[in-house]
Image (cartoon, rainbow, N blue to C red; front, side, top):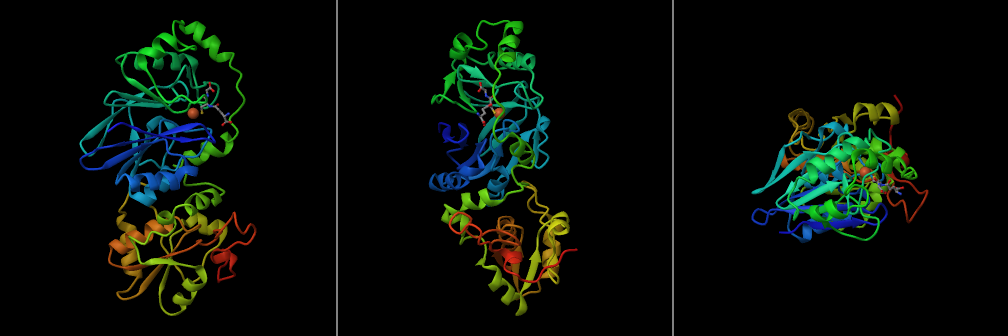
Length: 376
Ligand SMILES: N[C@@H](CCC(=O)N[C@@H](CS)C(=O)NCC(=O)O)C(=O)O
Ligand SMILES: [Fe+2]
């Protein structure tokens, strides 16, 4: 199976899906949060089970959907160890191999665009992230970039691959999809035939404007896209996908906050799965069971969460899972269901917005509806 190349026009980012034909296990490289619904739909249509999400580096121009993909599909997250993405379950070192079905992908440390940047090799394909672009390369003027390191990564690591190796870049700003190592070795305007000193001058003189979203994107990407101040884009991304917004499979159902409150009064168990820090900042729900969903992607299942949940929900009772915006609670409701509990996801969470685009300003969620909550 050839790599599947997907494009995010807003950031000109390429996302790749690789799959093992036999087992249908798949891996996704550099997924973009605005494209979450599209990517979930693509995986579903192709009958693929996502085993891994993978980053080439900490992006400065867009936010990854890795954390959300992991929550929705059960995939594990992997990222280069030098990228400061502490939430990634697997921290990749040079030469590490990731397996999906019978397939293997190899990580190559190719620093320069950022110090942690990696490229990935799969069969005759190289996914070069922003290390090597088509007739270009990643910039080196921020995020621990180094033109000298990039020169070595391109000329000594990537150009050492066979000429026929297909190059799949992390971006292209001119509508090109792929190249080859041979073509870049002879024709890449920034690096072909250049000495290290000449390359450093080229890179120093680029004078590119700062990426528009760098201040927001870098911190968000260091938590696999999960810790963002504004959660609205994720909700909007999910809204286009019926499966993501309302996954009938995997748990008993979705309930709006007011109905959850009524069920709670009737004896259902309300489980607040936000972190202790989130409750401290925003407020807590008196009487709810506090049980943080400390399941960073890849850590599923988490024995302490499972144990706490089983103790909190007596047999025959419904569990109502509440998080901040109604995304994590879907994953937690699925896990509760696996443990034999009748589990519901509380829509819009504690402070989510039901329909940001259509009803701007009309907010929902537990807190917004005036249901019981207190500041500590
Ligand atoms: N204009 C884009 C930024 C584009 C950009 O700086 N891209 C980075 C990759 S994250 C790069 O290395 N570009 C190399 C180049 O444009 O030559 C934005 O505002 O987001
Ligand atoms: Fe980049």
